[in-house]
Image (cartoon, helix red, strand yellow):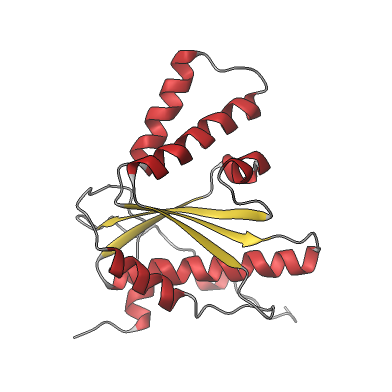
Length: 192
């Protein structure tokens, strides 16, 4: 029996534990195709997804992150620090069967750019829920490198803003849910 949307929303977790077991590309494509039914405000969907499945693609992304960290530091990294950053990102990006770089078009208009980021975030949530439904876990990362315009240039994604880096893996262990605030702490009537 399949789960209803409420169950999938409440059961979904961010999965940090990577399982390197391959995942068929057709499964990823199906998730992406269905995810595109996210709402958007413009005439055309503002999102783009770069699918990294090969070691070479993933290592290229890791190198762009290492270079970004060096730029953010404002001075050259030591060899030891570069290797430390590289190793940490390889565990997060190279090890999972798939890493997705999800971007949105940025045109320089505050309202339209905000709407594009919101729509792309809805796409990402759809990806997470659809992946969970088929037994896959997603970890949505928004590290500082997503704000570095040179990263998008290095990756050939000019004119776009990275909204998230998604690691997709099989779910072997389901973490406990994070505690949620009571609804009365974040919902109010405007007249109150």
